[in-house]
Length: 522
Image (cartoon, one colour):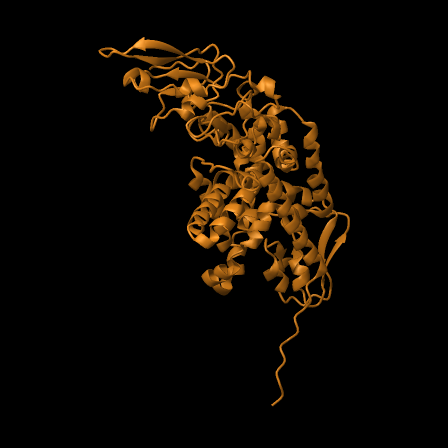
């Protein structure tokens, strides 16, 4: 009986290998800049490039602030790439897209949906209009001065997820593992050396804590799990940056075409991760949906697929944006903005909405991209994503939470790393003059005032050369001793928050920082 030979595998297409290599390098560069942004030096100087290369963020910021920053010219690179090679940004460079390829969940998806997976995905083509609607609404809301919808931009979403949940989670897991291994006598010294090397090179010297870390992790996990419904579900149906690149791709020069050698085997259709190939139209693909991943090129057994430059033939599909969709986006933008600005916080500022130095006077809400770069750079994790302090309009903009951290008197990193100068890039001397808030002392909670316990922590910690907290020596009623009582000089206080952070009380501190000029009832 003759020996059966396994069919020879087709060699990997060199262009597909090039795409995967570039994807890996782009993701590595993104993660390198993310890690380096947590330390002073070259990392914080280069970290703003990540957002300045994002055309959606730059365009929305331009519409909202009416300011074009010189560094934002980098966004022209993906725009030119889009006009030449369509959505190659999505298939070759986008770090979130690369992670969606890494965690494709193809085996699980096939197990859940069976052989009908392609047919089911084809029925969802109408959902492609969702990303275009989100894009148009984002841009029109930005024109009206609101950047809230940039929370759906893939780069801001990935940066926030890493900053507020994934990186702290990695730190906690590694710390727990180190503590477990350190108890073993043979491993204690290597573990200590490893920890001394990794901190603060990669991970912070002290653990960082963020509010609602579970929420950011859940959003990121949800985007990954959407791959169970369709490959790159996020890129197909939701991503507003993908929609912008898709519109540019309508005019791109590099196009996919199918030669007469095609035998309609449908292998290219099944290989396409974005479902851009239409069997009813001679297996042609929509350039606005094609990410140039070249999987169809590798899948075709007859080499009937070509990618060649040619003059664009602009075609529109039922899911592409038209006049009706534009009017709907304008209406949605106006209605949403009117509703958001009817919130009570629009009339009277939240007393705890403490902003980074200089940001309050710099129209933060009209400029902030919600990328979280300032939170990543903050060495004390004082800067946190806003939840209730700014309402929905200010969702995920930076606020200072003194109970979690304080504004370091010797640090101005947040202004240096902000990619759009929503936090002004102040030098250290100017930053030290900025008033973030004012300290108020609750004598009913203060250990010295209410319980006559010797405690002068707030006065000791105040970093100002002429301290904003002074002490007076007073007799203790009914006792033969005196006690030092703290007093706040609000004219001198800049609201750095270290007094609230260091207050030894559990729960709410006895001294709290409120927004400047806030009316506080104690």
